[in-house]
Image (tube, rainbow, N blue to C red; front, top):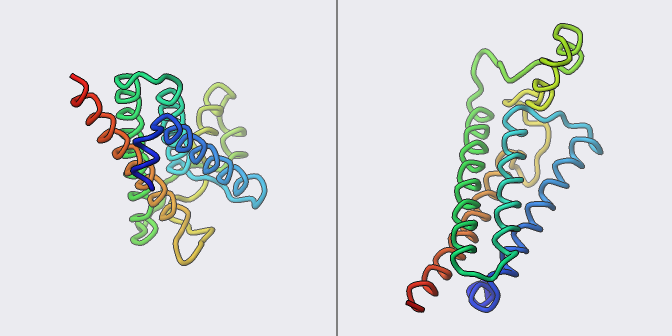
Length: 172
């Protein structure tokens, strides 16, 4: 079924991947604003990687040209790989925390000690502790599940690349 979806409609598969990324971002925002979890700098970087995957998958699904799909899916695969790397690094830090944690400052400390022009970029870096496990599902932390999500997105994008690459070779 998975291969049939890619063969029959690669653009729909890419649009589905973009929607999955948006849903993952929405869940992260729910955990931040609804539950009250503070994202750490690595969480913010993973969000940026997820946004890149969503944009690349969305742009790839916008046009039906195989070369267009191939290039943008490849860029999305690179972004998914980067996100998986950051999530794996955060998972490693959670399993083997260092003695000195230096993931960032708190929001009010930044505003009080720095001018607004320096404090704003710091806010977007996050302020939580990268080694803290504040939320779990089935024994896995948020970083563990982010890694699984990025790997799943990467496998799906790789499958699209393989199928689109096969089409490109077959049509020459």
